[in-house]
Length: 257
Image 1 (spheres, helix red, strand yellow):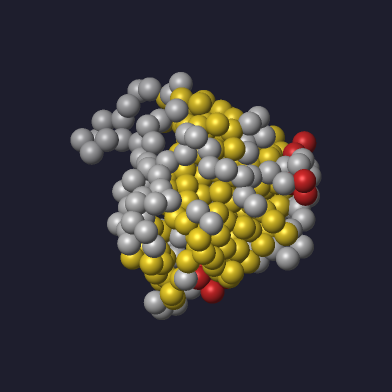
Image 2: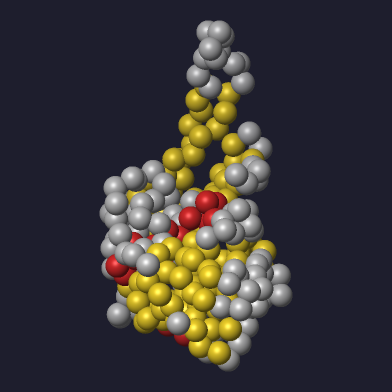
């Protein structure tokens, strides 16, 4: 049974658990506090920044719905949409599994050494409530006890390794912040006094093989042709071994979109 919903979770709450590393399976529990009587849900067919039709729904399986102890029937409307008839306003809980076996940055991956996912691959969209705050709970398991987690979402109640509860302003922000799981290297730097953090996921544990370097650069000229005199600091990184992903997690002190 999934853990109870955190007290600080939003009305749309996802709990993501890396259930079976060898079978590449994530288990997702979605709680909708105030569903409609005929609640529609869907997975996106494309991801922001990459607009090919990818049919993420083909990896979703074992969808089940309930309200309290009452099991509900789910009807699949087409390739990527489902509908649940339920009691309006009573919490609706959906559970399902997602097979994560695509190592590209556009989808999801899970094995014994690493996990990664975009919300477009794992998080069903709750129709009619897309603009509401959404929370994402990253659950730790015995098999991932030594792993860390990274994402650009704002932490509400996360531990030192990054597992716990995160907040998104709406569904768009949720699916625009991918999640990296595993033993990765974390780089930190400041630009204009703002702290930044980025994650590099390596093929093997070689964090010591990566090092940050700094160089100065001037801001480009403005539209009027006058260059700013102020110089900024830019951070880059180098790795002596192959790396897979350098965009999975980041945090800044800037206002969330």
